[in-house]
Image (cartoon, rainbow, N blue to C red):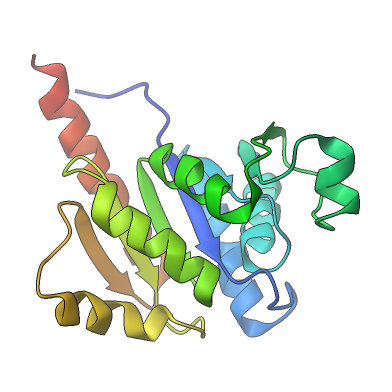
Length: 191
């Protein structure tokens, strides 16, 4: 059974890594892959790796949604210095950490690229709160905390309710994530 549902895939990672870096090119390919699979990309509206994914999705004709920490467009651009080119920008007025909760909870899947403390905050929200119908992906080889997230989950001593996948190849990672989301969606439609 084919689904007409568009899955919302949050791309979460470092805002400080340049988009033209090797990691930025991987994030661009990730965004392109999400759009090619007809997913909607969600980000925190920031520059860096998430914005590289936005550019990749836009190149492939995909939908992009930024969940901003700001109250309005001017604050988003002037105070935070964030780009304005996402197709839709949702203004939360909740600052970065408050915005993270809304961003993660709105996603069907969260994919992590690079990242530091802010990304770790997003990861812990996803790990604790996303359910079995959701997925968490880690694009390895993108620097920052991505190589440590599996170890962190093992240290905690429990697994996420969500599907958890790591891969250095964005295509394989997205195939696993979308397969899981479609499978769970088909199961949900039976009821």
